[in-house]
Length: 175
Image 1 (cartoon, helix red, strand yellow):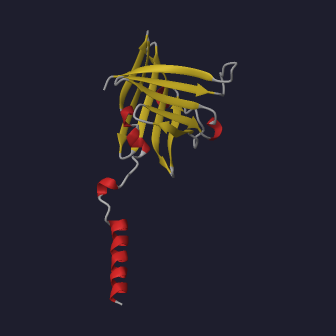
Image 2 (cartoon, one colour):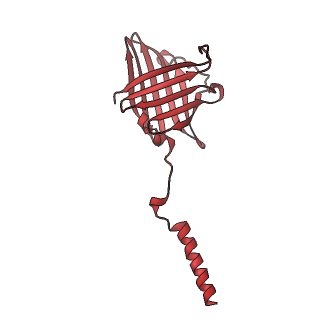
Image 3 (tube, helix red, strand yellow):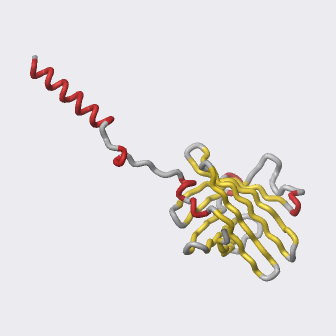
């Protein structure tokens, strides 16, 4: 009986050690995707002739909020409001477009343009279109510490003969 008791205690201690005794350093926690793409944070600009584009990203509380605007000849041509945040098990980017002065939204009142975060790391993030935007893609790629290439690939209006309209926008970090 004593051997049985020793065996039970030994098994009990082994089970406790297996479930509760592992040091914290051994536990692996995957960082949230928004943390992995924290390099996007800041103000990015592109000036070309009399034209100007800027994109701001701010990461607070696990959610990115972004703003983009383009100006031509000193006049605003459009604005984008963007959010990157967790949604269920995914991370999504939602975008709303507005005309000059925020007087008119391009999307319907209750609709946003939605992209799902796919492949991402410490220097790039690929967002793929969802729903009505399926087939579209936006890729952010950090080149060094101060250059950001934004590649947009769209398959809808204005698409090329190959079926996609692709544009690369190179921006410089200013803050």
